[in-house]
Length: 334
Image (tube, rainbow, N blue to C red; front, side, top):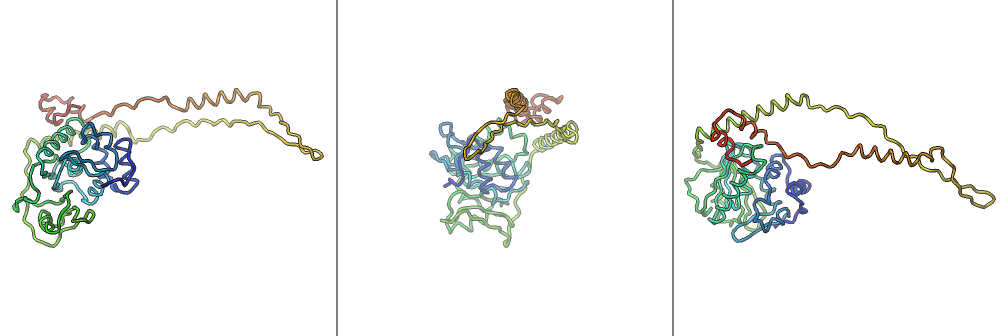
């Protein structure tokens, strides 16, 4: 499935096309899509197709089309702190985008049938955490992937605020899927031959899910990173003041003078002649000056400076032991 929008030259252009076609409609979903490069979840030899609106499958590895994932993300109505279950979690691409929205106090679980795909998803997650320039811009809810059959989940399992199943679901399994959902939750899945379908469960009793308890060490890292981000924001506001830029000096635009032609009618005969213009003699000089002014207005082409990771710089400057610094940075390489 796919092909609903034009292919992009890169990840941002693909997202622009999805926005223009109204597949991406909210800012949270747009930020998550832009933060994770879809090509990072492809095998190297297939990356040339990463920005096409097409599904991709190689062996057990599978990625749905971007238009499908964007519809799913919008339908899930994700918010920070919610719990999410991805049935058939595949490469982990969707789960990682969801984790950017859920934040550090959400729950993000994935169940995948094939063990080789589960390992692939864990590798891609580790690569994202260690190398992505977007990681430090978000408070991430790290996905947890396990291998298993999503139709054999224990009935004692905790229920979730949001559930997504990418595989086709038969009618006889509809109630089973709904039972994974909390009251007021949202379930998104393809039911039989129908398109994506979702429901809000609000009319049945449910058991209270056990609260996921984070370690004190993990909570301390979240709190310290949050405090540092606030300090960086305050320093940025203080440095930039009210954010108003100086008004650029107005430069008078030179009007190019044109030669004037005239046609004279005399006794049914036509005479064409040019009326001289006093400025004609200076026309070459005017054109040359105009060209110089245009060059002055056009800034030279320079490569943009690489983005600066202020959070990383601030953490590394703290008077702390190196192991603690790298723990605060999730042991990221850059």
